Amino acid sequence: MERTVAARMVFKTVADTKVALAIAVARNPGYTSFDESLTVTAGGSAVPFHELADYHGGRLHYMEFADPAEVTVDYSATVVGRAEPEESTLAELIRYVRPSRYAESDRLLPTAYAEFGGLHGEELLQSVRNWVYGELRYISGSSRGTDGAVETLLHRRGVCRDFAHLAIALLRSKDIPARLAAVYAPGLAPMDFHAVAEGHINGAWHVIDPTGLAPRESMLRITAGRDSSDTAFLSTVGGRLTLNELRVTAVVNGQLPVEDPARLLVLG
Image 1 (cartoon, rainbow, N blue to C red):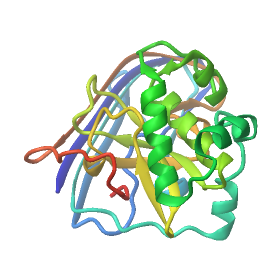
Image 2: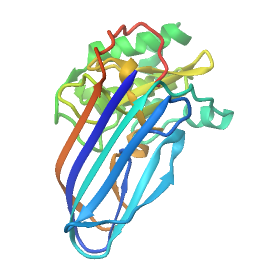
Image 3: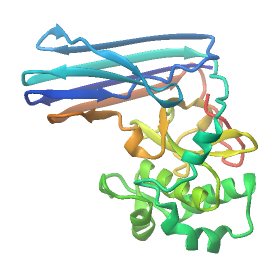
């Protein structure tokens, strides 16, 4: 499968602003070919940046602006093939079964056991996906950036990160290591960066998308972490900025895969 993705953003910074981007496709082994380009300009001049390794093949691109600047970022990548499944250490599995900032699994223990008490493994993974899909409504702009899984459950609505946080929290409540993956998602409408959940069962990380908005088989990982606090596409590390433009595209060469939510699938 050949997939082509791109992201363009324009933002204005104040003086002494440091920026970290997480928009590049995760550089994991296994792809037949991998071609990408990243340019950052301010006032018509190229901005230097540093690439830093992040979790699970993800990469951060870090840059500093001593003076106020209007910055344009253009990223594109074309990849052929699929990444190899990732092996996790015991330490990682322990990390991803703990409660986190936006996936408060300790607070959702009663809900998890009431809804999924006798379920385990693949059956639990699919049941959580279907339950979140059925309980929440996807409404753009309906949640705050500070909302976690508990608020999402109470309000019964949200965007992709909210769906993912709730699924992650419920899986962790039942002792399934779970994490959030930021992805490019061909077929998503409206197009944007997308967030899905991954649960570790049968020795591998299997992806679920409780929104049901795009086929999982064509998704491309950007990064992964405990929740969206680990996977933000744009972060300031000192200073501040105003995001004025964001455009994301993601397509496959040929027809999109047909999504079967019941199928076990590893992001590739």
